[in-house]
Amino acid sequence: MMNFHDQRDKEGDSQSSRVPPGQRLTQGFPILTYGETPRIPSDQWQLSITGQVETEVLLNWKEFMALPKIKVTADFHCVTTWSRLDNLWEGVSTREILKLTALKPEARYVMVHCYGEYTTNMPLDDFLKTPSLLAYQWQGQPLEAEHGGPCRLIIPHLYAWKSAKWVRKIELLDENQRGFWERYGYHIYGDPWREQRYSSQEDD
Image 1 (cartoon, rainbow, N blue to C red):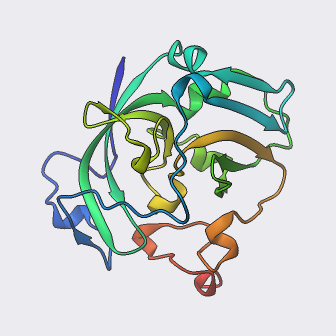
Image 2 (image 1 turned 60 degrees about the horizontal axis):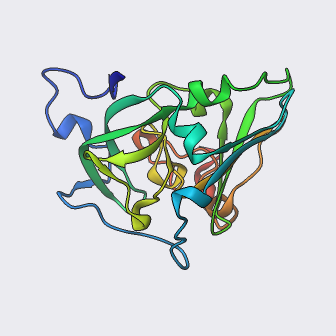
Image 3 (image 1 turned 30 degrees about the vertical axis):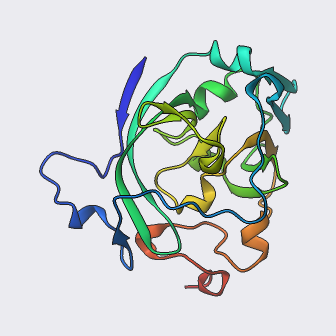
């Protein structure tokens, strides 16, 4: 088991320096979901890796849980303006997941597909950035369905809509495509430190 901390969580940093512009701190963990909450028993859960890869991969829960694990302490910033500091996640790093296949040279972007048909996109470099992971625990407990259980993506350096719940497929792409909220007006990248909330800001 390896442990990581968000790069912004450094000794001597004040809480205020860890909160992006336009955000406010919360001690809770608000639940924001579009549509119904998928409830997938772990023995029915699967994860596939497709697209610009040499060999497609399909994992069941047992195979996923056999992979090397990491623990990550990271801050979490929602585009709706709340932030929660020092979240402890446990799971499998995105780098470890993509070690399961060889990527084609054309692979430059990722589309994450979820149970419930949610999608979100990001550059491959951001998907692989340490300490991004596929998490199955939060604060030492299994993820509840409302928070994305049994497995969700965590990309700490981007707004939380990029940390997709209920992940079922990682699709490698040769060009960037918009996911669910990106098609409905959210920023195609979503850096909280630059307040990249909406697509109207993409030329800024």
